[in-house]
Amino acid sequence: MSQDELQTFCLLEVERLLQSNGKSLRNYAGMPVPNNSLVSQFSNLMLLRELQYDTVSLSREHDADLLKLNEEQRVVYDKIIDCVSNKKDGFFFVYGFGGTGKTFLYRVLSARLRSEKKIVINVASSGIASLLLPGGKTAHSMFNIPVDLTEDTVCRIKNDSPKAEVFRLADLIIWDEAPMTNKLAFEALDRTLRDIMVSVSDRNKDLPFGGKVVVLGGDFR
Ligand SMILES: Nc1ncnc2c1ncn2[C@@H]1O[C@H](COP(=O)(O)OP(=O)(O)OP(=O)(O)O)[C@@H](O)[C@H]1O
Image (cartoon, rainbow, N blue to C red; front, top):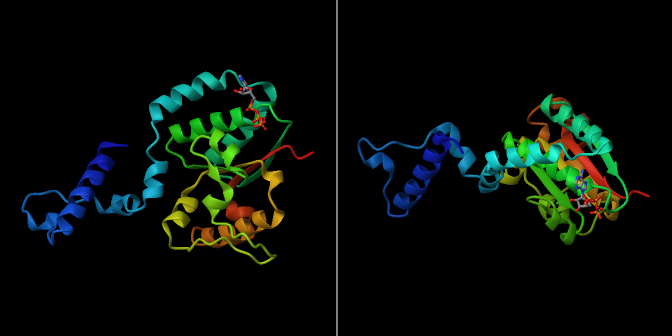
């Protein structure tokens, strides 16, 4: 977190305490007030968490693990990083038997992007696999996917919600164990992200997953 962000965060905490007692920082001459352009970020706790990673240790972890990637992992890594860094949309299937190094690759990708203050959404179809992903959650919980799915289902995420804001800003979505999930769940997420991303650019409504870079991983055989 930068000094500016840290100051805004502290001032917001003080402002919250004061407001609960009917006062505000503005009542005290000479007191700084939170930087308005940063306030909306801090009212979104999910976003705050995504931006709070220790960039220095992640960068160190990334640099060490990058050297360990085998040839195949490196090809996939380069393609995905190229898409994210150059703001291109991209949709990838990363497949391989269990133990072939998919999770290792996701960790290196996440460390690289988070060390650059980019947002990576890591999910897996099962709770157990989600625990292996850094900052991972189950797909159903992260994307609010309804249990009963039809051809028209959308995820229960309002366009103006904090979660939608995080997805709007997300640079990469990794979904592990994808073959375990009903295809209707991916279609629901696809519709939802197109809807959320249309406020960024109208062309996103015609792009898979609203133009997000998405990686679906697992053993597809
Ligand atoms: N390039 C690498 N260098 C060093 N260790 C690696 C590398 N790739 C994978 N590993 C190690 O190999 C083991 C298996 O890799 P990993 O868990 O990433 O496979 P996986 O394809 O995700 O398996 P599963 O689908 O069963 O979750 C792990 O201990 C991981 O740390």
